[in-house]
Length: 84
Image 1 (tube, rainbow, N blue to C red):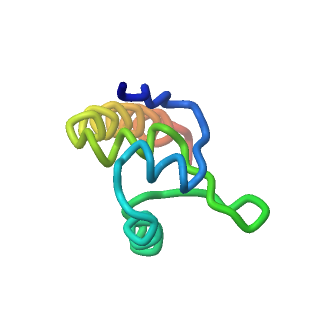
Image 2: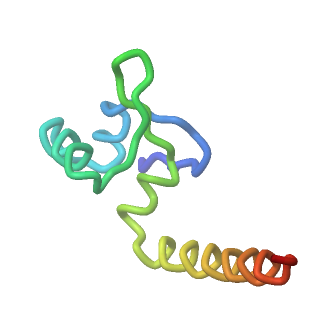
């Protein structure tokens, strides 16, 4: 039975490997190339669920990017109105 990937959950490289059904060397390669973003905690990588979802669902990443760009534009517009 497929396991649900929770966006805000934190996964180890082994858990990510199991969820993505890829080898340990592939996980390491994705981390090294920056395809899979993670933080190192105590010498071990920790991967947010949203990073795993981003890899398997590019359209979700596109939606996130669009929302981010809209928010960024609003922030820049507000800053540009500040007196110089």
